[in-house]
Length: 277
Length: 307
Image (cartoon, rainbow over all chains, first blue to last red; front, top):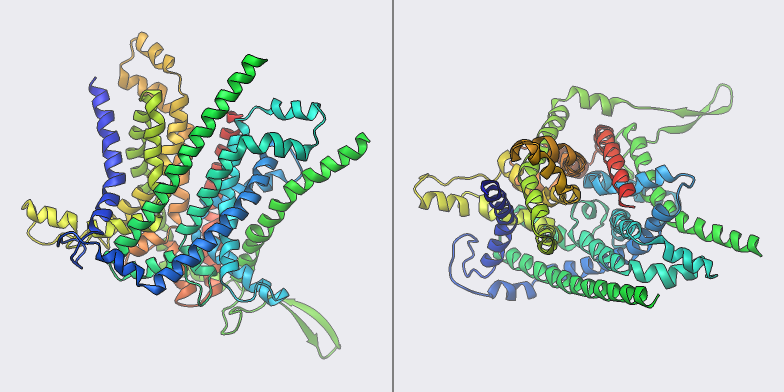
């Protein structure tokens, strides 16, 4: 019984470590005082001030657009890569392909950012594209590392899926493309949704890579936050951070509800199929 | 007919691999080759700010044209001669090791406790570990500034409790970097640890207990060795990105918190020296190649087991 005591203490300590800073951040976003750590009474004025900050709103709009494009492209490329890795067995160049998929998961941001910047500069000199740097280059850079995360998510979902379903459809004469759209896609749909959300969040979160590959006039929200944080804390950033966390956690909450419902539905369908068969 | 279908199938298959393959070759592999190329060039004030390695040189005496290749090793030489780079590398490794160890010490008991919890509660408990990962990295680092700074919460609390009279500033020191990095990387440690600990058969521990082993000894001799793959995967997931970390030391560390990611950033953005920045990146990559390959091996094996 004594050991259980230690473990639950460790667990509670871990959760406190993870959540206390976030809770404090949210609490102090409602602080009247400009001094972030001195409580001056409840106020929502910093939220009001956010709405008048055009620079911040512009950066937020850019970041959301980049994140949406990144997430969509990452899902397309990552799903293809996940299928290739989990269904195609050994194909030529698989080792290199697998390496290029897992490397971005751990590669330091500064290296990815620098290497993509030099690529874009060299390409512009050679073929004249991309012209300057901005939205397109940030989206390409973000897609390159986010698709790796999507591929891993898709791959693990496909590994957990019963391959005989696809084989059965194939035996019944369905073409591979039809098998994919009718059988595989609905089953991996939850993984695609979570992959999209993951890529969206990763893109919305990145400051280092975006700093390398963005040009003048294209400043993303994390870049604005980063430069203002370097000059110290401000209640306005607290308000912005709380707002972002509210949006993200609402999104995650809705997504997990949807996924749970779909999983339950699937389990029911499978059970009915079993009984029917 | 079957030949046609077969051809269509292989062509479809080919496309499925080719699209992401070409993307990664172009945007992941080729950029490294360019970095390698630039690291052997010299910095000049031009656009782009480095010299070409290969030039067609016309030899007037013979009237012929020859290809001249200049490999400039001075960028690498500088990294061995200037203490800044070596110290930055060593310090990065030290900070990454301490971060990994701290994540392991906090994360292992957490993962173990979650794996031992009733199955119905495990999902929620794990969700609570992952959730902070979904909120912005930058904001989680920012949250610590208000806690660690001189007139921040820890300092105010210590003064209020009468432990210190002076403001107590942890911010802008190596300690702040350890705390911040452990904080942001902790979920990466718990996730793979939980995955291995959850699969552990409780019958093994019962067998050890039946044979007279005390719980702690059973843990050391059964659980710990069996969870080694999770420990390795989690440690690498924390260690590798930590070595090249930039945001945390920049925001929480002091001006003397030397890390290689910061050096690379400054060479590029402050000094505009692309060749040296590239050489630093190549050296960092060479250092990380072995841990990354071990990570890929572990990751690949876990994927095989999951099938």
